[in-house]
Amino acid sequence: MPKKPLTPEEREERRKNWLAPTGTQQERRFLKKLLVQPGLSNKDRMFLDEWIAKPDGFEKRNMLFWSAAKKSVLGPVVYDMAMERHKKLRPDEWLVACLIAEGIDQKEIALMIGKSLRTVESVIAAIKEIIVQDLQCEIEAVNLAQISRWFLGL
Image (cartoon, rainbow, N blue to C red; front, side, top):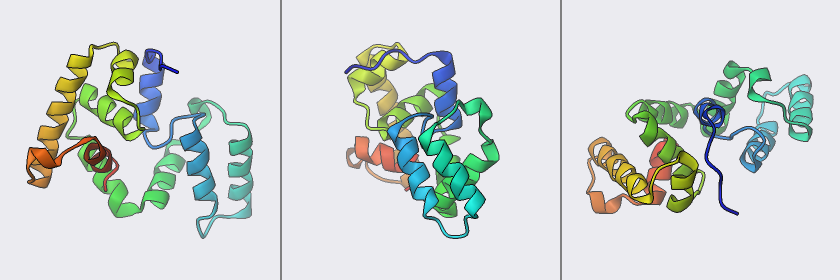
């Protein structure tokens, strides 16, 4: 099923919660993975179980919790690397890289961001150039999977 254009609110949601957008299967998997992390209190486990059963909107969520959760699941080094890499991207590059990391194809990305396929391809080329500079590699080595890994700090 083709994706619909993202609303400004959905774009902001992705910006705030780039690893697991609200209400998605990714979020459910992420929270389930977080549930098995050591050091979680029973109260926190009950909270996560309730959240999985009935997700609410982002405005009810705590940004510090999500930052800590991402750091816990990804590991501090990978999380910090991802955050540093995100700073290297302009807003349109960031959104395209995020959608690529979610596994969305280029045609759907074009529809979701309200741009042409050619524009999306140009943005991807710009992202590849940033990765080439960052990783000191050949551009031929940078494909969509590499963009995903780079975006996620891997």
